[in-house]
Image 1 (cartoon, rainbow, N blue to C red):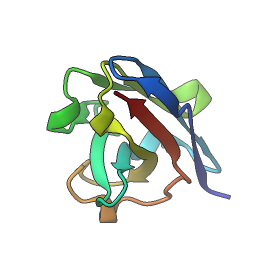
Image 2 (image 1 turned 135 degrees about the horizontal axis):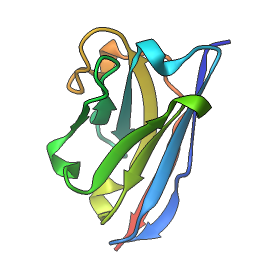
Image 3 (image 1 turned 135 degrees about the vertical axis):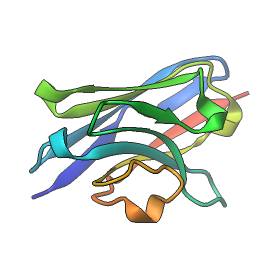
Image 4 (image 1 turned 30 degrees about the vertical axis):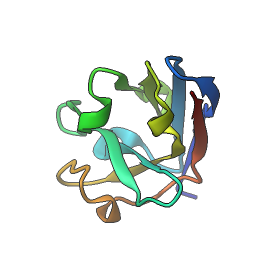
Length: 124
């Protein structure tokens, strides 16, 4: 069964850090772009960061540049999202997904194999 499982969410104070993990089972990340997305309460799902399957290049949404970092461990078939200097507006359910072709964050609908999500809550 093809599955993505996110973990690592939690409650943290503003300015704190969290590292999210996304582990794949049933397939390998090797040939897929890997993306992190989030959905805050009452808002649409938005792209946070993704990594290209071609060259490993990382892309970030403007609001997280300089604070978040995406990385991967191919041996563990796991992708991470290191989140630093967290702000209350980062509060959301965070999801990972995969996609072939162009690693475009702006079109979440084109990504697939969504995980169940992990809740991140940043208190002020």
